[in-house]
Length: 360
Image 1 (cartoon, rainbow, N blue to C red):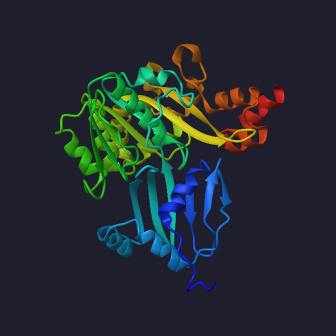
Image 2 (cartoon, rainbow, N blue to C red):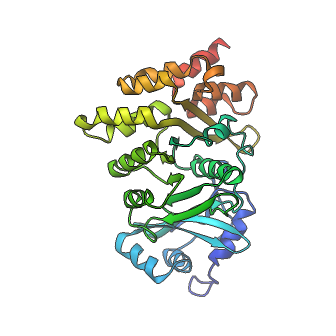
Image 3 (cartoon, helix red, strand yellow):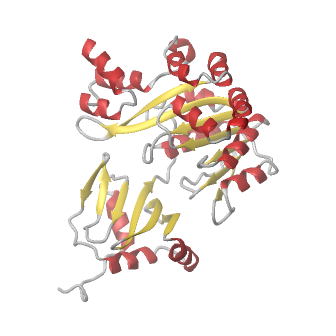
């Protein structure tokens, strides 16, 4: 059958079938068959190679004229959508030299409780705080959105709060249980994270989620909100707790950094740095480096001694509830959950980890 007469692929049926493989992502790229990501590895589906025109037809079948116009102007489009009786998806359309390509991320409709993925028990205590800043960080695809959704879900199950989320795009959709949710999407419901944060303070929030703290204006507004009686959740693309603190401070000019360090020292509750890696025998497992802003950590931030924070995180962990990524990797290695090669590749401090492994 020629390319002109073959039956086009139904994108909705393709997305539905991909869920049966328990995959996290679907990729449509010109010149390749559709591929899915399972346990962090890409695997091609047994389908014909896609041409640019086919992908364009599938892509445009999911969006409205307004979104199509944005994509054709900017050559990039982020959005989320829900297929009835299937699930929610986060999508990104982009152009390549061969034509339109698409990446779809699967989002569970049911928000997992904190205990489902063996999250640190301290998370349930952190979300009880009345004000301050909780950051969940990590690379793309590390499960940050799921962890944050689970933390908000815990609040929703237990207390009456007004929770405002500012996301690009909205991923998990929360149902009001005890709390009241106002979920806003950058681009369609507000012009920017910083603008939404500015007006959020006039909307009587108790809790604010900032989908991404990507610029100086947004970070400044988040710090102010955290200082003024709100609990603020945010994300950054950093791979460790000390790197997260440095990233926030370095966004500001030298003359502003002392004030920012003081704000961060007084408002920070915790930094949770998360990564996902393949299990032995299949599946994935998370490591979560946890920093808790106790008085010692606050002093190090205030005095511009961020380089000493890692050493502080290693001390008296039973009392502080802190843990480093190296600690987490060693636990998984001893339990034979991950391989030595995976641990070393995933480690932020491979030399430290290898030294400990060789002494075991």
